[in-house]
Structures are given as C-alpha cells and as structure tokens.
Image 1 (cartoon, chains in turn cyan, orange):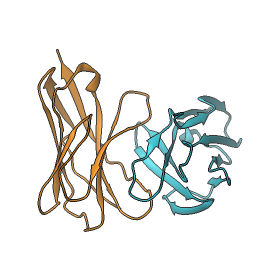
Image 2 (tube, rainbow over the protein chains, first blue to last red):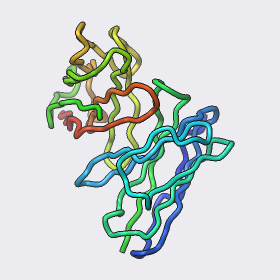
Image 3 (spheres, rainbow over the protein chains, first blue to last red):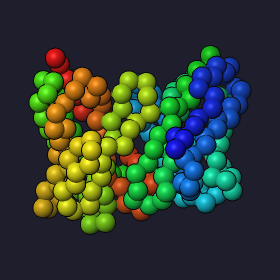
Length: 112
Length: 109
C-alpha cells in the first residue's frame, strides 16, 4: 500500500513569507502528526490531528498552524517565516492511539 | 513530557546482535514503549512497540523489564543497513511522540 506522502519535498522561501506543507496519510489512517527536525533541537512534536480535530499540540509559537480535512489529508502552515524555521518537516500517520506511526520522507524547508 | 535515556552511540560488528538499552523510569502503567530508527535524511521508521510483555517481529525483539523502567531493543543479526539513529520513546493517550537524542548505532564490517 502507498506510504505517507509529503509535498513538496524541497522548498525555499524568504523571511516574512508564509508556507503551506501537505501530507497525505496512509489510507485508513485517521491520525496525522507533524514534527520539526533541526540539527540543534532534534525531532520536535508540532501537533497531532485526529478526525479533523487537533488533539495534541507541541510548544511552538502561533505562527505554526495546521488542519486536517475529512479525507484525513493534513496541511501545516507557517506564517511570517524566520531563518530559524529552516528544517525538515515530517508528517506521520497512524490508525489511532497506541498504534505505530508511519513517517513520510519530509519536506525540507530553507528560509533565506 | 516523556523522557528516555539512551547512550549516545554504540558500535556493532556485522552479523552480531546489537543490544540497544533505554531507561524510561518515569513511564506510567498505560504508556507503551516504542522504538523507531532514522537513517540519514529519511523519515523515522517504526521498528517495534510493547506495553509489558516482550515482543518480537521480523525486524527486532523488544525486552521490557518487569518494573517497566527500562527496555532493550535487540537486532539479532546486524547488517550495514542497520546503521542509523535509534530512538526509544514512550507515549500514552493520543499520538504524541517525544523524541530524545537517540543512540547512533554504527555497524562495521
């Protein structure tokens, strides 16, 4: 079966711009989580959606937001980009609580 | 947030068993232990998870101590392709994985 698909794979944006990243989960998975990975901070949890509702949220500023659609696809948005937002953004999907999560290949965002 | 302690790095000879330890002394009764690995520049890959009992699948075995405060991931016959960063995580309700710094496993010929 198809895995988790993230688009785009690479993105270059300018400071102050906004960006939207997309994640298509594995068919049948209702939970989608987002993570940010940087060399300095490692893998950090951003937020998790289940059946279109945000169920968990990490410690990130309000510039980071997300949503989930009725088909479980999810988007995350970062507004007013800063240089420090340059990172690999990973999406993971799962069937639900206490089940294994499957990660996509990520979107590498570079802010210049 | 959930905290685990893992050695920063380990070496293993190809063909030998790799035993990766993890301490999770603050785990509570309904929280599962998960293991993931990340090969450079790829998304983390699920390996195995368990609650109380030892678990085995086609990739690895997971040994959880009786008090559940620590666990060991065993790769029975390590190959060069197993070189990666291995993360031990525990989580309860919801799907919020809190990653630590992991163990960088280097498998050598």
